[in-house]
Image (cartoon, rainbow over all chains, first blue to last red; front, side, top):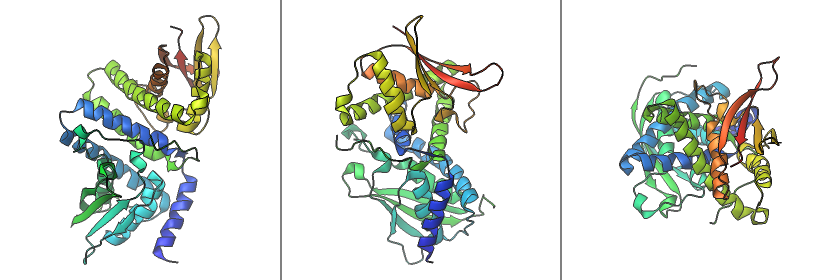
Amino acid sequence: MSRERNLAKIAESTFSKLDKVHSEIFTMTYGAIVTTLVEDLDNVDEVNAQLDKMGHNIGERLVDELLAKTGLNPQPDMRYVMEIVTRVGFRIYLGITPTLSNWNADSTTVTLSFRDSALSDWVELPHTLDDLSYFQLVCGVIRGALEMLGMKVKCTITADKLKGAQTTDILVELQEVMQAKFYN
Amino acid sequence: MEKTLKKGRPDIAMSSFSFLFAEMLNYFHSRASSSDELEGRLQAAGERLGLKVLELMTYREKANRKDTLESFLSFISNNVWRMLFGRPADGLQRIPADNSYMILESVPITNRYIEAGQLNPATFITGIIIGMLRAAGFNNPVETHVWKKDESTNETTNVYLVKSK
């Protein structure tokens, strides 16, 4: 069985065992958080930073649960880990599977593309918030999750559906392989 | 508005919500100087959500415009609860003595896996109810209470008490 199909199967069987909710409550709670931060904080950069920080904390906890529930215990191999992130992680925790493309020759950078809006259903950004990265939480999640697996990465949103792009794209760049924080 | 709300099965793991909700609580906690303020902010976040929900649901279910408080609360505790939480609330009761209403829920989604000390995380859901009521033109106050189901056991239920104006 191909690795992709195997991971998809792991995702389905793990998902069937977990407590579930409708994505609406998640999406709308996230919307309320973003609105609150925009009101609270002085500028959009601070909002983006706060979303990234929240995402980082969530990513650390999610990867912990994901490894425990799936029994996966990946080495810090960027290609394999990114497949787990997309085919298992995003599938279970956001109900979507982003695509991976534009791997560089030494497999240290890749682009994740989201065709579904998922997190940003029903969101329209006013022009005063042009610099808001609504997807920044997801960047933080990826960063936090990969850090737990021993990979320090930089995540950058390179295209945003909310700003007219066809897909929302996140560029993930491996910066350093570290000691994994998580041991099975 | 192009998007409508989906009416499918629960489609994501509950931990996504729980961890996000916990981050929101942490954020409020880091900025609030008192537990009243923390509770107020949590409720306000719920109110935003309630406003948005009503906006989307009236768009989808125009035929379902509700006129009386009782029918509107029935809409909330059935349709809205199903959409947000995947099942109806555990009950809606009228208290004839003062014409108030109670929406009952044994285990609110906000209280699963989340330890919040003195704060009842279900205050967020109280906020959702307040936001919807306000958006529909009802301005009844809503309180959150935790009641013992039965004196002999320690089982509790959350009560969202919608008071008469």
